[in-house]
Length: 300
Image 1 (tube, rainbow, N blue to C red):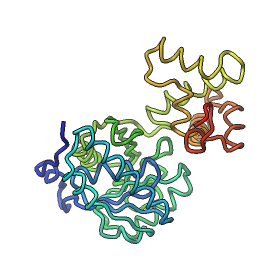
Image 2: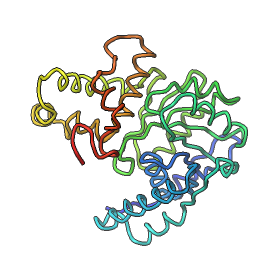
Image 3: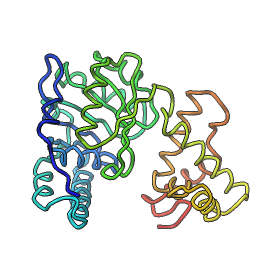
Image 4: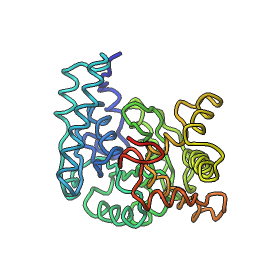
């Protein structure tokens, strides 16, 4: 099955008094950022991927090329469409290069202070009509919106990893997010071939409010000797029909990311059931972060 760009879908992304969305800025060239940049480029948008470090941008472009290459190998994309998508992707090392962007997606580190600072800066350099979206997996959209003078145009657009393959996008409405902004962002998801599902602005939203306690409990089970990592993952895969065990998934997400999300849940909801497992804290402190460090609950 081939992916095509449908011009009529793109042309519908116009709100009252708004210019059509053509150029999309993606900030953060990590795993999520390069995946988000890829799907926008595949869908026909001009994409500007921004990160402070050029080596990160170079690695991101290589990752996107490899990902698109796999689609070509599996006959899900033509070589011509791959080349066209890559041609729509550019990189930059300063957010000041996003002054002419029509839509922004932030995908930097999961840190509220850093995100607020970034959103305040974006508010100053982009047109007042531009929607500022965050790929945050747990941080308050209302908080990010309050850092700007356009809280009605700030929303959450939480993609799932790996972005090119997963169809869900969790759409988070902040306290001041307008219906119009949510409509435009949801139509944008559809143009990407994704399915938008709206969630309220509570810590962890829907996905991580449910997922992270399960992962945390699996880590407690390892710490308490209830079972080995392999045994726990096998039970969840074979007994609960999960495609991936919770500890394998934690390694895939990144144990530091899991810890950050659990801290947001614990601090934001004040319930001890969200207390991060001490073993998780210890592993993160040791630099055992999962796949990206080569060592987590498994060795890579």
